[in-house]
Image (cartoon, rainbow, N blue to C red):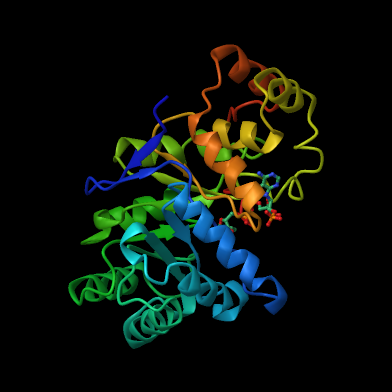
Length: 284
Ligand code: NDP
């Protein structure tokens, strides 16, 4: 069975599940296991690794640097700049610092982590300077809702944005109302963060939900696999679960092959209805 893929506006194609890294690099005792988990994910074809200068104050980027050592070409490397660094010389320095921690000389994708006080036009200019210098191959944004995206698009060069990384899981479907169609109309994949709702921490009982459990039982899957298969059920969405163990990585990679039937999707819709009106973009 073919694995699901997403295609970026420049034609770059990736498996629809990647690997998150938030909370990696926090404890030195976990670094070896985290490094191995990411490497195992690469072995299984989960080539996108998502990190940020924010995570563990650069510690997550250091873990990623260890994990990708000697296999940089296999990886689609994503990092994010703090809003307060997303313009001018600060953006250039933040990117250089990320590259140093990641032990590489380029990022495949650099994202504005969330919108802050720096004008979007300054962020576009900084991203384009980095791109022309070969430090990043492409750029995008995170946590921007439709109004912010419209504003970005109205600015010169704003339509070079390659993705919007936003919170999306079965119990938080607000983007389906407007942001997801907006991105899809422009051929731009959405990167779904917290696709497992942080193992249910963001929504108590999500993993134990009756519909999720029933479908998992019927298809011999785990609840996490049902949640991931649901997030990537439509074209143009890439899920980036964070997994700190090989067992979780293996489960997550297998979710690429899972196809939920129309009946399964209806059952999940009844348990977690699609939005009928505009809601604020959910963030963590
Ligand atoms: P996730 O929804 O990915 O959940 C991570 C949790 O799920 C961890 O506790 C992990 O445990 C557990 N888990 C992973 N795989 C399984 C599995 N197969 N079965 C059961 N539990 C599992 O939450 P995150 O917040 O980590 O989001 C994913 C990524 O998105 C982040 O790591 C980060 O890269 C990005 N992100 C971006 C944000 C932004 O503002 N742009 C905000 C938040 C996240 P264990 O570690 O033990 O495997």
